[in-house]
Length: 105
Image (cartoon, rainbow, N blue to C red; front, side):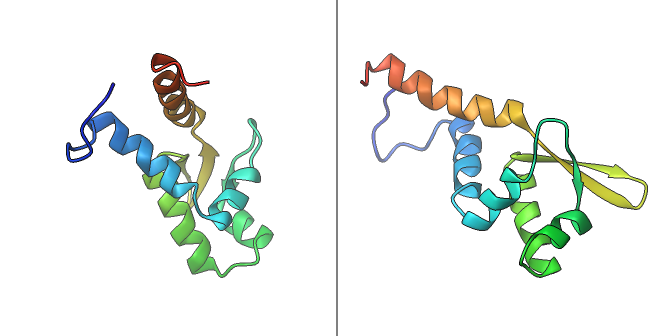
């Protein structure tokens, strides 16, 4: 795929851009790196682990969830977050596919 710089991004690339933008912040990277494949965390658990205010953590979680880096699930009165690995993999594979298509070293 090759586009002119003035052309709009393909629709699917806009979603991928949100993922990379969300991951461009070091605090959001720290939140992501707290997770392992089998873990989910509530907002309170993440707040307790981070040197940030609750409102800052909530903001970062919203950015990560809106970018589909994290998925959110209501469990009773709390929301639990998990890594949305399929969405992250898709974004990374799309960029790798672009490099492969154009024979980048």
